[in-house]
Every structure is written in structure tokens, then in C-alpha cells.
Image (cartoon, rainbow, N blue to C red; front, side):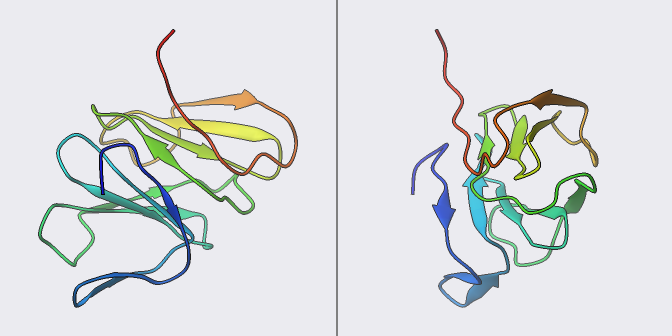
Length: 111
């Protein structure tokens, strides 16, 4: 699995480890980001099965695919029409943008 890839599913398993959530993404340091349906994104360091820290996206109803950049900036879309941006190591959104209501996936690129 490469950098910036996201997978949709539920209770994703890598070897013996199981990560709850509807989508995952990896940053440039190999941290795994797993979003749940409890309005949290959980961050797992490489090689560990325990959460390093969690991000509270309380304003998000339900989210689908998430994306994280190499530096750890996380983007979380919400079906409510908001896209949340979370700075590296932050535990809550640092910015939000209005998008098409019902957006469920996000991709980040350079122009």
C-alpha cells in the first residue's frame, strides 16, 4: 500500500492487527489514520496496534474516504457538506471548507 492511498471498508485487518473504521490513509512517516463512525480519526504509529492519538471531528456526521499528505495534514470529508483540514499532530480540525453536500471522498494534489 502506497503513500496517500485510501481504502474503504470496515474493520480493516493487516496481519493480526485490526483497525476499526470506514477508511484508512498513511502519511509520509508511515502513520496509519483510521476513521471511525464515532466522529474520531485514530492515528497508529508504524508497527503498533495501539492508538498514538485521536482526532475529534465532532462536526462531521459520517465520513467516507480520508486523505493525508506526506507531512501529516489530514483531510476529512463529511456528508454534511464540510471538508475538514487537520494540521499535523492536531487533535481537532484547524480549518473547514464548504463543499458539495454529500461529499464522501477527497484527494489532494498539486497544480
